[in-house]
Length: 400
Image 1 (tube, helix red, strand yellow):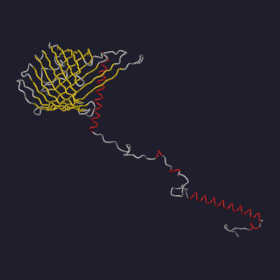
Image 2 (image 1 turned 120 degrees about the vertical axis):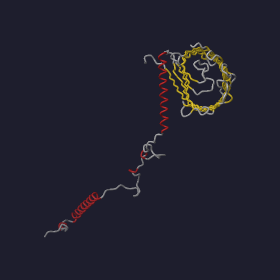
Image 3 (image 1 turned 135 degrees about the vertical axis):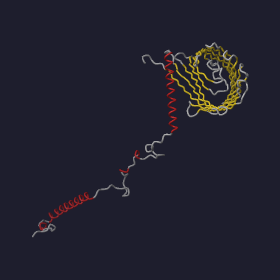
Image 4 (image 1 turned 135 degrees about the horizontal axis):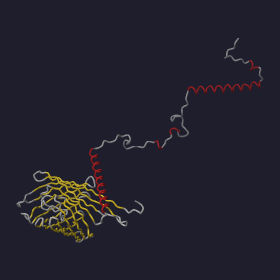
């Protein structure tokens, strides 16, 4: 008869002695316990996965390793959406225009300076013991005048000064030009003794170049000689000499006196006398008077003018000027050719090299038969300044 596997045959246990029975029982019991534990462990590994203790479980003796706070992983508060998340803002049309204008102005300044240096290097030399600076300044004005009766006139003027220090520290090249066909009233020119100015026409239309060599350069005295060409057909060559004396009248007043002698190749001789007084009324307010007279064979008489102006600085970028003037010519049908009253507002805006002026004026010019008429004009000007400078540094020998 076969005994089932589950039936225990304990006959062999009874044949053992007491001590042996006790020892064997302990061993058998230990083996059974080890097998049982091992079987339970294997079964657990196959059916379940050990999970780490959670924060909601029993108190942990220390910080949870995998929940440790790392400073470099903590998000920093951001006041606005991160730039790498945000799309690029749309480009404004006016911003694009401004960028183009600034880049064009900078390119023109560099190109003009490069050509000035090339001209200076070609005609001049630099002594090793001297440092020379090549520089220039250009003022370009464009004007729109709304004249009497609603007429519109466009005008433009250019004034350029180039310091050619490699040729000579005292040598300057000046280029002056003006084309203002709508000008119907006379006023004092900015360079009264310039022979290239067309004095026989009531409109300002001229262009000339001039090389000036300064013989005396002092705070109180300036003397230069110059020669130039008027860019007109036929070409006119002229030469002149100008001396100006400055005298302080106390702490707040200044007087200037100038005399210019000039000659043209068309057998025209002449001279210009200038007198001006300036008085500082208070900080930012200047009172100025100027008188100019020119006698020339070209005009067969005396051309004169006198102006009184008051300038007030409103801010570091804006100023206001009130001016009154009277002008005449001894050869005209009327001794006084024009009376003038104007107000000019000038302001620097957007860029340091950009200015605009708004100028309403009231004048009483005389016609060819001597009758004076009242005119009211408003002029808007836009001025662009170009300037550049560079220092020609000395280089040690052996370095090219």
